[in-house]
Amino acid sequence: MESETRARVLIVEDHQVVADGLAALINDQSDMTVIGHAGSVAEAIVRAGELRPDVVLMDFRLTDGTGADAGLGIRQVRPETKLIFLTREDSDAARFAALESGASAFLHKSRAAAEVVDAIRVVAAGGSLFTPRSISTLLNKRREAETQLERLTPREKEVLRMMAEGAASRDIASRLGISYTTVRTHIRSLGSKLGVHSKLEAIVKARELALVE
Image (tube, rainbow, N blue to C red):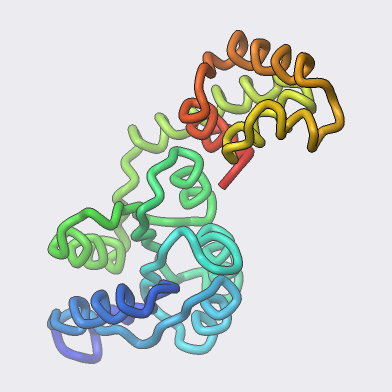
């Protein structure tokens, strides 16, 4: 592919070492080139408007928000730009947020370099790594999560969020101004409604319900 038809890639990554490695990988290809770098949501939106990239390759967790926030902003200033997430985030909530922001791919950072490069090629050409089946699965999981969330009381949501943040029952009681016994009652109710029996399960469930990031 001639240089004038190379896919123009903007990297959005708040770890400079990672960004430099991705830039070296991409610039080593004959059909794509890195045109810039951003390290935050706000900078990504500005740079996308200025540089007009074909593809934005970005992390999901950024210093001032998420890649989904950046994606929504980028789509407003540059709707034709394609979005690829490359992240260590591995939750369905993150995948759904990425999909809602207009992403064409969601890759884990453990993927091989060749897979990342191939994804850029596919997406730059107008393709997507979100299959109809994967989209349907995400939508079904999202609907299930919304149904579960509706079953919880506002107080139960607070308790679940604090459990997911690692707070002990007595700490939760102190922060909410309620008794330890009341907290235990809420936890038992959560266990019945959601099948949560440990802090690890609480973290997983709270992320599924988008109560914590």
